[in-house]
Image (cartoon, rainbow, N blue to C red; front, top):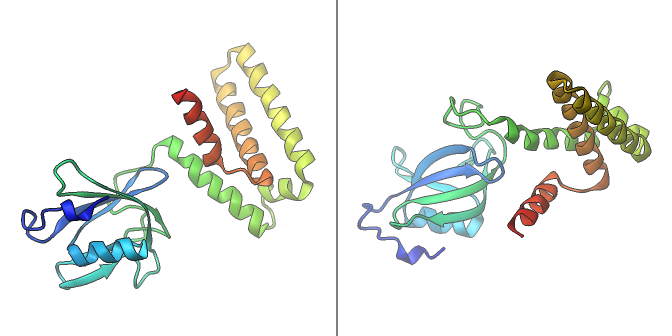
Length: 201
């Protein structure tokens, strides 16, 4: 991204910025940057805005620790608006919500990323009473067995043409597959990227 193409006079020294979650693409917040805020964001890879109320630079998360870590940045076709794809470090909104746009809820598919994070934390923390913990303790043979069992259950449900059963068994299969991926050190994102690459071909 070439920042020297921004016409700062055209935007009165402040360019609007939209921040999206780099994984889910959910819109997290909106703000403005002056030239110094933009330079600081690029230098530190953390989103920094210009606060019009405080009249100073403001790094998101400087007091809460809920930083927005920059993954990618784009300039729109008119070169007067910036889109940032960021990895949020905690909730973005000061209310504790994931997004400042409270009515914008994640689509169901985006929950898979959240579930992958939960499974990963279970593998690291191994909390008592968790079914996921018990799977990790039983080891890869048991996890692999569960993937096979659930795959068969999905196939049987499909043959019976039972939509409710298909839905439930498919959910079980996906969950156990994600546990298997975590146990194997394979990121769910890598599987999605593989599917995307195959589609391109």
